[in-house]
Amino acid sequence: MSAIAASSFSLAASSKARGLGFRSSAPMGNRGGCAAAAVPIQPSQKHGRGRLQVVAGNKNEGGLFAPAVVISRNIVGVKKFNAFRGKLIALHSQVITEFCKEIGADSKLRQGLIKTAKNNGGRLGFLA
Image (cartoon, rainbow, N blue to C red):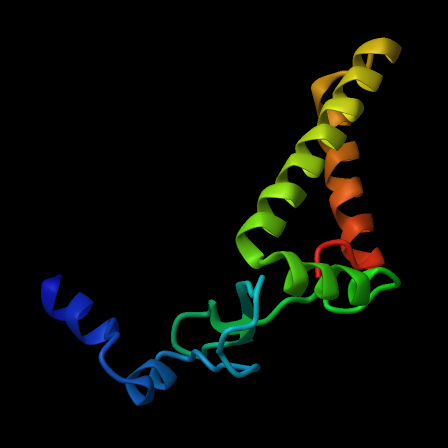
């Protein structure tokens, strides 16, 4: 088992990582707020499961408010900006929770509303 694990996983060189089916679709670097995601690509003939492809980058770079967010982050600094954005997100989640309590909604609806708020914020550029 250890021989299989040792030959299947190697983090030493990028050429070996490419042999595992990982490809980078965006250059890595200091791009504040970058996220990496793994998405399946074509299924392998041998195992019948899809390989994973690493996709790095912030998918919320566009949007109406993205330029203002990027400029604000550059002026204030990344650390203070992320702290402030975290406080705003927590406050908005509290407002959603209080609304759900007021109308008697269950926790599944509350979670769905918070997820929808995150998706809408990303599309508008607040998460750029």
